[in-house]
Image (cartoon, rainbow, N blue to C red; front, side, top):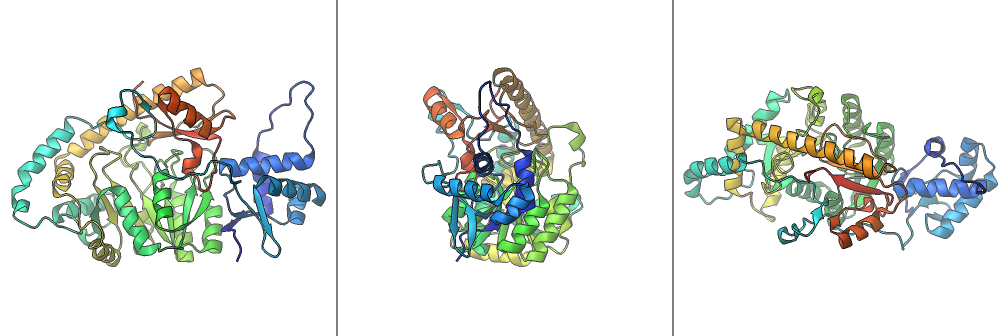
Length: 469
């Protein structure tokens, strides 16, 4: 059986190689042989995640024609990559990209730094802001006032408190997406929601298509569930998705699930436009793939032109039948990470299946926290707290961007219009070595490979703007 999970066409690979900026050679520096330059270019594309690991490369003759070089040059480049561990081949199955065993491979997600260590470490690993007071205290006080009737029950609500389910459904309906409470399940954070979805749809060995890069903790959750991850490279800069590439992967790999973050993608900060959303939903529907849309960053727009309903419509707005898109939302990013309330919006039969499976997991989400979020939604406190959160994130982002430009002018990044993170190319340095040095010097920085599949993005780091200037 072939070991590749996606394919890169000759024209596509040629376009990616031609987009690489050649660095001018210094005085007396020789240009490398053509085969070596080609091998280095492909290796860099793999390490940056622009060509996924386990992607089948075009045949030697096809790539030679697309690049206008000899077949001997391509054959020598492929042989060099095989010798370095960046390419594997098998007669009859072709050649596919790989990462050598010695390269850093992400083995874990991003664990929060223990509170007792905060005084000795600047934590740029966790993309979360402190609680937006006084709204946390007010929400908890409001929840305590509403608690007595619930205290007379058993306290287990596998689908969530009816009042909160109705409130979340009402909020979707107000955005032009008609939703019934029966389409909502309240979960213990977005992680709890995605874990439940993966266990329902993505059994051990099932393929799940993911953006490349993607959120480290979700990738690790899927690995531990036994999924086979199929990476799909993001578009250039902050342009969102390469939908043609997505359509190709969905058609050829036939994944059971696909996981995407359309709104201020973690880690790149990209914002997918409405045309991309519509086309990706159509492609998923045609392939029979369930599309999981993570909306945890959707309210964290930082530019005024995106506010007041001018954000692109939610991904589920392009799936009126509700048969393709499952939406995941959360209070953890927009409000506070300690408020572990998330939710799923899906077709009623999917929600019923998720609720039934919950009997063997956590039974339900804490009642007091659900009441606190419901208080925020029903009193207008949510909007005021999130406005405060946006102001904090905007100030932090601008301070970080200014500092990087001043101190590290060789590092490259695009400034996102929202979210909580910068995705930074570290000027030719190893992201893993930067992370290792940071641990020794008191600055916790997650390296790029944590956000890729099997060791990609070695030249990147993720920098959240959640620490004050």
